[in-house]
Length: 330
Image 1 (cartoon, rainbow, N blue to C red):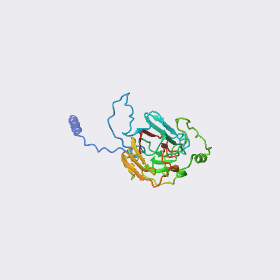
Image 2 (cartoon, rainbow, N blue to C red):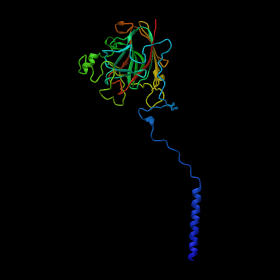
Image 3 (cartoon, rainbow, N blue to C red):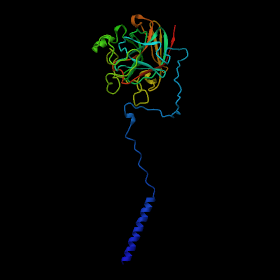
Image 4 (cartoon, rainbow, N blue to C red):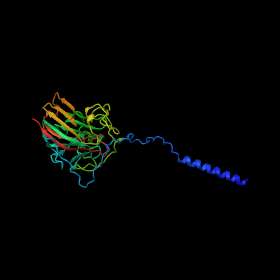
């Protein structure tokens, strides 16, 4: 009896083992759909869509930067140094801006942090078409001056590459005391004598590091009016961080390329100037002045590029200019 019971138990074990083996050999059920990762890089400030391409073959001998302006233009920046240009000694934005030449481009920044300034051409121009290529860091405010004084009282083409800013519009800069605060008044507000050089600033040829206060919260200058002007309603400017397409109504917003070189052309004609501005070959401004608003009615003057002072800049931010050329007109 005991033998029969053992045989029965053995058969049961064999049967169960066979069933288990057959079950294991059956195809596994399809896996559940893969869930999207919880991490979304587009939700983070500072991210953007990058084009994935093929990396170039590495070499220790890259091609040298190309220095060229369009046919008919004459270079006014030689790609090597700032010969033919000089810093304004008394611009209200600052007198020690950090302008230098790096790999064939002019690179500019506040120095010390909070103090800007302008870089002027040694030569004056009346009627002309100006060409340049620019690549700024977002959050940094610049401008193109023409018919300027040594102090920077001038017509200006805005290059306000920051929230609420505009690009390519015609305004005036502290002409006849309007639209800004002079250098002495700014120094007085800081409790400094009229001839003071900011602490930590470089002297002579602009160079040196940053000093001063940390950047505004969020890393970008706040929206608002230009120096001396009232606050403005904020607008979306250019291609926002985390996006791959322009978002805004101004024409420049539709053609601007972030993290890339952009072409800017400015055409000025007439004693009462007719001003046309192109960004990446798109007309963004075409306006005829009703009167000549230049300081003291001048009809010629230096051209300048600006580093805005105050909080319209981000820490360690830069503007870059290259391939600057001019075509003088009758």
